[in-house]
Image (cartoon, rainbow, N blue to C red; front, side):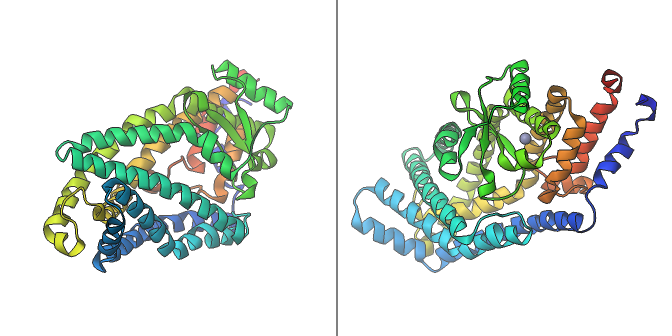
Length: 396
Ligand SMILES: [Zn+2]
């Protein structure tokens, strides 16, 4: 094609026009509904935690746990675990609506209710164990170092996060899905070749049976150091052409080569530090104003946990545009890396359209900045067509 006749905007429109009518309306409705779920989810969490404090539930359970053991740390662990199980059960109807009913309504889920609730239970069990240990750890740090706990606490959170990133691909992910090495094929050879060309250990291409849960197309890179896994899901393999799969894997290699996971850790530390500052302020306010009623005499009391949950819900709701923009910026970097590595701009634009089953294609400017943790389909098609425009002469 003559480079002078290649019009980026027109090419992008050609791609966007492939998703229209009911498919486009569904895509928009599913994604826009998610904005409200963010808000309602946070408000619901605030309401439930407030009720737990207001009706004296936290106070009574804390006292009951303390009567059964002299060891404060053990009482903290048991209280935190009971709290997690209780709040998850109270919020279960909401979780069923957002995670099961709504996913089926938009044709995204492939699970029956039994399988879904089984995974919910397993996640809750794992979550309760981790939450109980972390909460008890933070409470112990607050009691030992009432003035400098926020610094030690941030250190503890970084250690926990690093550990979770390290072990989850090998210990947690296999509890929910099977990860198998991709079958030998010319496509696999292409992916491995692309990996070697970009300095990525070449034996790490896995296929995950994500079709057990949904028909979403996806791929990801998980882990850290020795546990790094680059995997694509079986939905992508079934629904994508070889060019499309290569384009996606180029993107995933980008996350690996650009060290997106390790770079997240210091950013996470900064966020936790700010969060702990707000927690200290809100915690002291709760002790002053509601200490007697809620049975919170200091920041190190386990009954502070529902107060912390309220702060956490509002903090992360308010931070949504910031966290989304940080992630989306990395995703944009990986998009460009992937185009350079895979050299499949049309494959990339085509797969960006297929992602419209769960992500809106054409948001407004601010809508994308606030609510998108990945570039929109329009942004991705534009990146791809811009890349293509600059490489037309090589293609001839
Ligand atoms: Zn990505």
